[in-house]
Amino acid sequence: MSYFDKDRSLYAGGLGWAKPGINAVGEYQVSGRPWVKTFTLPDPGNNGNTTSEHFADDKILDDDDAKIEFPAITKSISIVNHSGADIQIYFCSLRVPSETGAGLEGADVDGADGVVEVIARGSKVTDAELNAYNGASDNRPDSAVKENKIYRIVSDEMSLNLEMRCKRIYITGTGANRVSLFAELTNIDHEYNCDHRGLAGISGCTAGTSLG
Image (tube, rainbow, N blue to C red; front, top):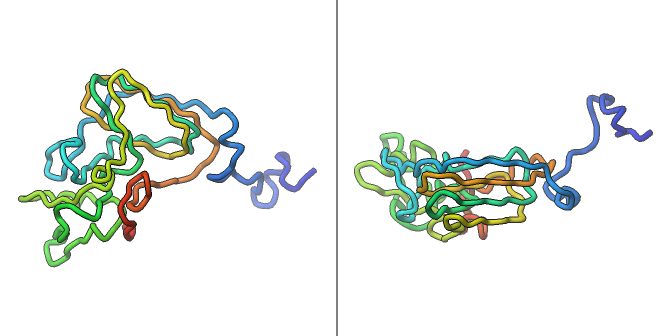
């Protein structure tokens, strides 16, 4: 009987079989656990000035309601669009700023001289930063995803099949009807956070410093 035998999992402080990591080949070779969700698209995201919009321009946008978080790393994903309009599929939040666009001077968040240079940072802007950018004048920087066109459009009554690993996906659109999402899940528990600038094919642009 080996030390890590399942019958001895309570020994040595609870040591047992090591959990599979993000590169565990076997997890992607076997069929995955099913995960299904049918939903109505959320309202277009808030631009920081209590006004909702969508992909009307390249500016950052609060798209947190469009995020779908999987309970584990996926093996494959299938999306079926019955919304009555085009939908957009992407893997990095629209709140991640690019290096260019309006608002390069930053936003005065703390009311003093605390200019927040979110362009230098490569992670998502905070609610306070988004609200401060879109005050009397809209000085929001561009979204890395929007500016670099790193999203996939799926037309109405069409489907998209993806064999890929991810932990979260964003689905946005203006249709009022349903979108169905099917996924095969592995047993891999990993954050796999792609909400950062500088990821080729996911967000693009040059990497920046992270928040916090």
